[in-house]
Amino acid sequence: MRDALLDRDVFEPEEGEIMEVSMGPHHPSTHGVFRMDVKLEGERVVRLKPVFGYLHRNHEKIAEHGAYLSAIPYTDRLDYLCSMTNNWGYVLAVEKLAGLQVPERAEYLRVIVAELTRFQNHAGLIGFLLQDMGASGTPLMYAFREREKILDLFESLSGARMMCNYMRFGGLRVDATKEWLDEVRALTGRLPGFVDEFEALLRANEILMARTQGTGVLPRELAINASVTGPMLRASGVNYDVRKVDRYGVYDRFSFKVPLGEHGDVYDRYMMRLLEMRETVKILEQAAKDIPEGPIIDPKVRLRGLRPKAGEAYGRIESPKGELGFFLISDGSGNPYRYRVRPPSMINLTILEDMCLGHNIADVVIILGSVDIVLGEVDR
Amino acid sequence: MALPPVEELKAQIEAGVPGASATVIPNGSPSAQHSLLLDHAHARAVAEFLRNHNEWRLDYCTLVTGVDWPDTETSEKIKVKKLVKAADGTESEQEVDEVRKTKVPGYLEAVYHLFSMEKKHGQVVLRLRTRNRTDDTHVPSLTPVWRGAEFQEREAFDLYGIVFDGHPDLRRILMWDGFKDYPMRKDYVPPADEIPVVETHS
Image (cartoon, rainbow over all chains, first blue to last red; front, top):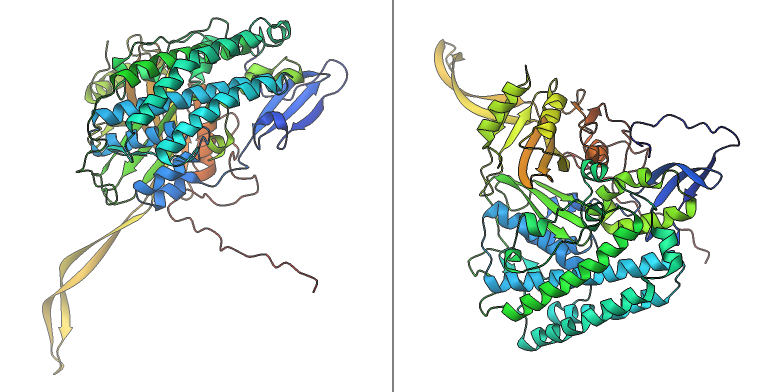
C-alpha cells in the first residue's frame, strides 16, 4: 500500500488516461451529503479526496454563544443516530470542567441508554453496509425493526425518538419508571436472538466474503498514527476502548470483552460490530439487574446558571463510532469560551484514501460504508 | 509506567531535545489538565520525542483545535504631574489622574491532546501560539508526526486562519474554497441575512 500522505504528486498512468469522477454529494451510498473526488485508471482508484462541509452550520460557534445548558440539544444533532452518547460526551466534559458528581442511579441509566444506542447504531450500520453490497432491503429492514423497538424505549423515557436531549451535567433530566426498566430487561432478553438471526442471514454468504475479505485493509500502525478510533481501530487489532481505558461512569463494574480483529479489512470491521452487539447485550443485562434506587441528579447543580471556574477540560467517551470528545475552555462566564467537538466520524475519514487506493470503484462504496460516518457529525 | 507530572515532563523534554523550551500553562479547573507551550523551532522535534519515547509512547494525537485570544486592552489609572492653568491665569503644577491604556496583542493557539494507545495512558496537552492574529499566524504542522492531525489542522486553518507550516495539503475543509473570513474567530461578524427577492407573477 502506498502512503497517500507522502505521495501527493500528480499520478501519471503508464497507458491510457485518468478519469476524474465526482462521487456524490447526492449519491445514495454516501449516507448523506458527502463527495469524493476520485481519480480512476480504468476501474482502479488512484486518487481519492473526501470533500465535505455541505451540512456545516458551525455548531461550535452556536454552542459558544449559548449557556452551558443550551448546548445539550445541539449535541443531539451531531451524530443524529446516537443522541444519547453525544449528550453523555458533552455532559462528561462539563462535569470534568466544573468538578460535578453524578448520582449512582444516573450513571447506570446512562450506561443503559448508551449501550442501547450502540446496539441500534451497529445494527443500522450493518444493514446499510449490506444494502450497499446489494443485499437489497432485507437486512436493513431486519435492523430497523429492532432499532424501532429501541427508539420506542427512548421515546417513552425522554419524549423523543432521536433528539432525546436526555442528559444533564450532574445527572439526567427525567427518571426511568420501574415499567420502563422491565421493558428494557424484556428487550435485552430478545436481542441475542436477533443478533444470531442477523448473523446467520449473511455470515456464510459467498458474495459477502468475496466482497469484504481483503478489501480496504487498514494496517495497525497506520490506524494508530491516523487517530482512527472505535470498531474500525479494533478491527485492525489495536486493543483500545475508552470504556476500558478511562473507565468513565460505572463501566468498571461490568464484565465485558473488547472484540479485536486481525486483518483490518471490511469483513473484520463488519464482524466487529456484530461482536460488539453481543457484548453490549451483556452490559445491558448487568446494568438492568444492578441498577440502584436513588436520585438521578444532584439537586445542588445549577443547570441554568452554571459558571465554571476559569480553566479547561477534555472529556471523552466511547461512542458507537469511536472516541467522541469535547474540549471546553471556561473564562468564568456563563457560556463556554471555547467549545470543541472531537468528531470520530470525521477523523476516521483521514485514511479513507489510503484504504481505497488500488481498489475498484465499486469497493469504495463498501469501504466508506464500513467507516461508519454520519454527516451531521463530520460537518458540524 | 504512568506519565510524570507536567513539570517533570517539561524538564525531560528540555533534556531530551537540545535547545527546546517548554512552558507550563496551568489549568485552574478541577480537571487539572495542565499543558505545555512549545517553541516553534523545536515543536516537531519535541513531538517526535514524545511519540518515540520508550516509556511514554504518545502515539495517539486525539484532538487538534484552534483557540482565538483577541487583542486585549488594559487600562490603569495613574497620577501625572501637569501644569494646570487656573481661572485667574496663573499656572501651577498639580497631580492629575490619567488613564493609561496598554494594548496586549492577541494570538491564535493550536492545542494538541495526546494519549498513548500502546501504554494506555494520557493525557499530555501541547500548545503552539502564533505571534499575532493578523500577519504572522504561522505555527509548525505536526501532521508529519501524527497523521491524525491532518483534517483537524485543516479545520483550524479553515475556521481560525492558523497556517500550519509543513502541512501536506492545507486547504479549507468545511467552508468553501472562495470563502474569505475565519468564522470561529471571536471578532467574526456574520453577514446580514439577506432575504432574496423572489419575483412572482400576479
